[in-house]
Length: 323
Image (cartoon, rainbow, N blue to C red):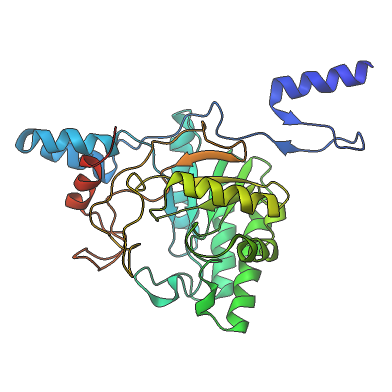
């Protein structure tokens, strides 16, 4: 009886579930976003744009403040090595010193985006494994949330059998390596509600070892509505034993546009709901701004290269926001 009371007290104090069905101790973390502060970068592109426009374009600066004052994820790609480890460690320390939860995105798989607008990534599998190991070393055992490889699983159709197998192997490696940190909440990207069916995505996520992760991420860099994402997310979560998920709401305020490339700088879109752990489903851990609003999707619709800051597009997103 005393042991039972002690375990209940531990749960109440730590937020960790400590009893399995057999009565043995287990580690199953609660929602990492509940009660967490999210970092707002004072040196973001949007913040610098606000400063630049404050005198010359004060009304536009006020609109841009909607983006500058909102937390957004940090994306990592590029080469491995000492400099990269130091970069990750420094960014992690900066966010934690602000008493905030780091939210990181890993985007560096070989043949990233299958040679399209966001082409690039590590040269080969060995380089990617080194890169993942360096990222993990930079983070250490600090608490964080991490989204693994947007579009990598939902976009497998462009790859042949050997390349698909290699990609699964690399994602499994990433999950396994990052899971050594007991404070890492890992989410594998699962595309969006208008891409692959829940049954197909469940199959792919299982093969990528989602069982060892907290769950999956939806709508990254896309425009599907939050309602559609939650409906899809709940269906997918049930197929995966009630895994949890996060939804990117950065640019979905008016939902998707029509057209063949409705995902690439579509006109007339708006900022979505600001980041929060108050969601429409107990399985949805948080709504987050994973894509950085105002960074181009690619050289389409008159936009600059992928990832380049595009202030006028950012301004349009802010002006059309409903808040």
